[in-house]
Length: 73
Image (tube, rainbow, N blue to C red; front, side, top):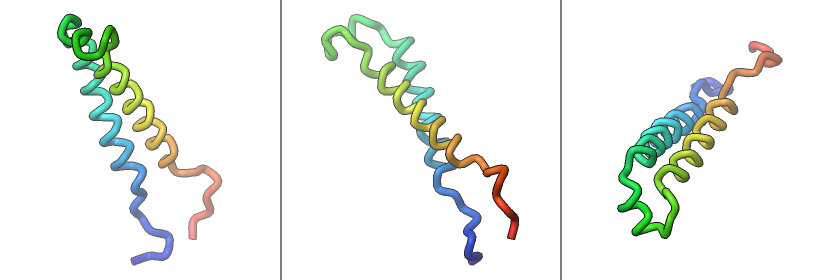
């Protein structure tokens, strides 16, 4: 195994959170509001947590971008 390591764990974590966040956000928008409000007292918890997960996933993917300043070994 190389010393630099080719696997960046931020890529699969970011992709997973982005995908689940996107699905949860869409589900939160399409979910019947009467059922959601009965359990969360007026808020759409799936939509909000979906947006939080989506933002975290995109943030992780942005952190995993290759740097332009990096010198190749």
